[in-house]
Amino acid sequence: MNCIHVDTNVLLDPRNLRNLLRKCRNRQFKIKISPFALTEFIIKYAEYINRKRKELLSYPIISHPDPLNELLNGMMEGLVDVFIIKNEELSDFLKYVNELQSEILWLGPSDVLIMASALADKECNGFMTRDKKILRSINDPKSKIKEVFIRAGKYFYNEELERISFD
Image (tube, rainbow, N blue to C red; front, top):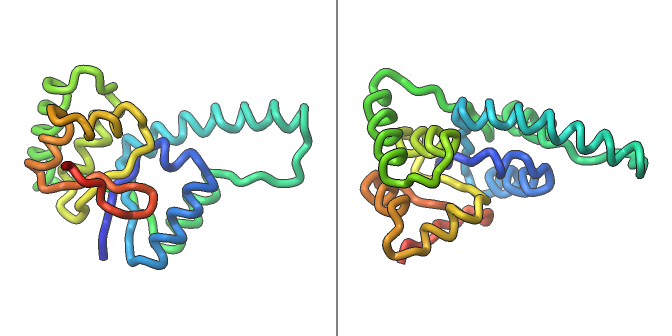
């Protein structure tokens, strides 16, 4: 079974998450979420709920998709797991944190921790994000992110669960 880590921004869009889970079910993929992505999700979910609450006051909607429900349904179905750093992965995780932090100065701390988790996870071979700056950077021939992923033997994936070429 293929396994990919996902960034928080993938989790926060309920329709896209539902489509991704459907594709995972059909193509034998599993999604892993780092504890850092899960924490960021919970923080941003509260913002999402407050925004939806304000929208509902102005424009009542009978039901709307909810990213937390989609995520929990994926977990109950066995399509989503939380990645826990094991002792044997800790040194790799710390190496990737240092490497990302020192070589890619524009990455925020959450992005560094989330990507380092994806790089350190021996069971997964890729990472999916909707972050436009990260996606643009992997198309840059001088991309440090791309170099780190290539050295780790990892790939970026698009929302169709296809590897993004580093060419």
